[in-house]
Image (cartoon, rainbow, N blue to C red):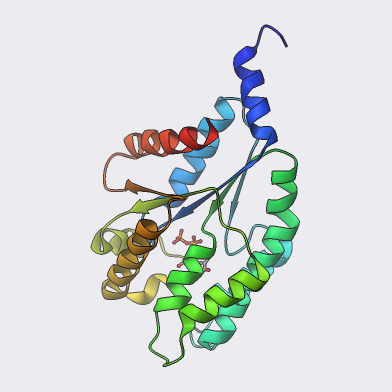
Length: 222
Ligand code: TYD
């Protein structure tokens, strides 16, 4: 152990735990980047838990199937907010909090900002859905990531990538580029308002993007 000061430092740092989320519109490449960051941090000696939403715990994965498969109009906007928040609560209780308590770096592919955008701004129902999302979040979740990495990409690129790889989970990929563009603007506005965000250009080469992502994470770990 004394001859491995670098790894010891990493171990000390991870004892505090760190919570990182990835956000972005469909097709932004955030899932690939989340995986690359997990691999890079593991290579540096950190214990990393890579997880995703909706899902990340057995109960939340059950809710994922309810909400992402089947008839898109199955749930009202309000019910959808409840389902995503219920999934997040289970994910937080069963997966995220225990890992942070063990001193791990938790990397989640999406967290509450996705609900703020996808459920909060998407439909003109007349109800203030964004206020509902925020209210429910403060009552039921109550935590934000230490670092949120927003992989920013233009709506056309994101949409064509998402359509190209879409499987049975077409629920939100189907939205079209106008909605994707609104969502992108919404994410950028959130990022401008909250210092926990790092905005990374998602247009270039995946390896170069991964280097930017790692730099943002290391700044938080330091
Ligand atoms: P995800 O598996 O991350 O798909 P992608 O890799 O395409 O981003 O998420 C699935 C879908 O769920 C995605 O279209 C966004 C949507 N979603 C919400 O609408 N609200 C939420 O709170 C979350 C976490 C995801």
